[in-house]
Amino acid sequence: MSGPVSCPQCGETIESTDDLEAEETHELDVDEDGSVSVYSDDGTFYRCRACRGALGVGHS
Image (cartoon, rainbow, N blue to C red):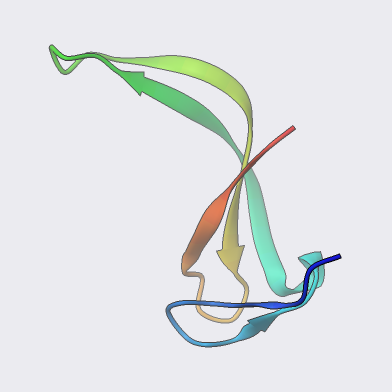
């Protein structure tokens, strides 16, 4: 088990999922010509509950 994480934007301590906001998201693939397509749809986007700053994406 790892220790708590600090939000890089506001410094809030993230100790559990209670300290996060999460929403399901799609992973996109961007081609060299600039076209975009959905690569997968199994990700969760996490934000700090205190400042709503982006923290990362988790995959299931």
